[in-house]
Image (cartoon, rainbow, N blue to C red; front, side):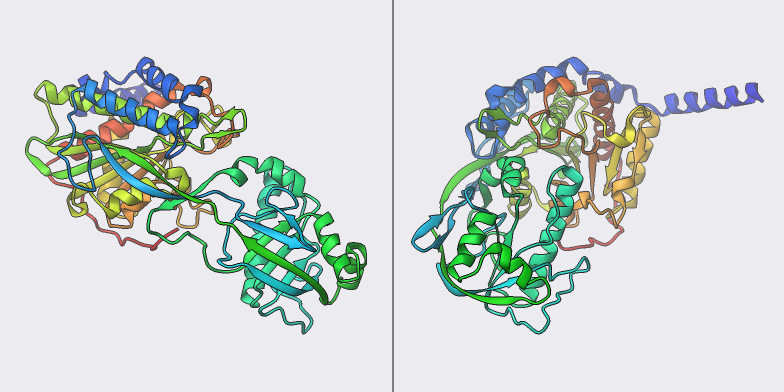
Length: 517
């Protein structure tokens, strides 16, 4: 029995070796742990200031990527007015700095990050209020309102309780789930402003400091996302008490009086706006290797090279997110460029495109698909790499793995190509957990491949999962597992090589699906 098993394994190894392409292997061998580390040690260093879109560090990273493409022998693209400037596809961003809204009570102004915070700005005009509908925990876990006949339509509502403690990651997630539930219910009831009183305001400001101060960005000319609907503001107990005292009661008394039925409290206050809006320019970087036989057909490889910048004295270097994907893309570009120099260029063209402003809402890839340099109907596939340098808690001590997301959403043939390349060349455990239609994380909609998928371009999102340093200062280069990073990079390389060289392009045979995240 043991002899039979051993013979079977040897036959399978021999079969796999027979399927391997010696030329393909030659250029795969140029992808090394040392080169991945060399690139990442630069891009994820403090000098690059967290690579925030439109900022100095992102410009430095764009220059590094451009210079790398030049060194590989990849030339600039022909100028296209408003679309391409050599190696760059620039795009304009409208930048809103949080903090445009303040609450004025008895002539005293209460500002953002003082007695109040919010996570979106939806009011468009200064607004005066003469009263508050004050309520206790009137929204249950299913989102049903228990207003006992009280109307909140067109009025300001103050919720006094029911939001759980925000300490810790899981509780924090519950906090925001519940806050969203209450906001949506009060919006459905017609409220015009929601004030949520929380004793955890200082804790939230500390936990969410980077997010609360980080500029919001959108593509120039677009309306801000979430610019309509109910404005929700979290306020301190001290501010709530002052507002209620203005209405001749106190927070303590109001909690008792509104435990079962909301009460209307006369109190005059204003919400005033001083919008803080500016503009920036960011860039996608373009490394184009032309095809030898079918140059009009294109394989795209993407990875976002921006991260979330600096907060106070802390630099968020984003070594895994997505420095890892960016250096994987660079190493692949070098391998394809060298193959082209040696007379083994791909049949189809390949565009290696590090994109920017992913952290601001997939903006760089959306700009590309709205203003494609190459026609989307000639784009064979997008292979997107976002965080492939570490492992998550589900794979501690496991065999080398990578999450595969989206491979079968538009093309079963693309899925089969990726599976075959893994079987022949890399032998990773391909984990499809996050490819499930009902994935609560919705990862399929949360990285740059999705902007291609929306246009019917087959795509694969390569991902190694979220870890404890996700969007934290601890996402540093020395924590990268370069052995895993190289193995995962090789899978993307071999899949890209196959897509660029196989006789026919992979077919779209599945529906596009949802319109958006």
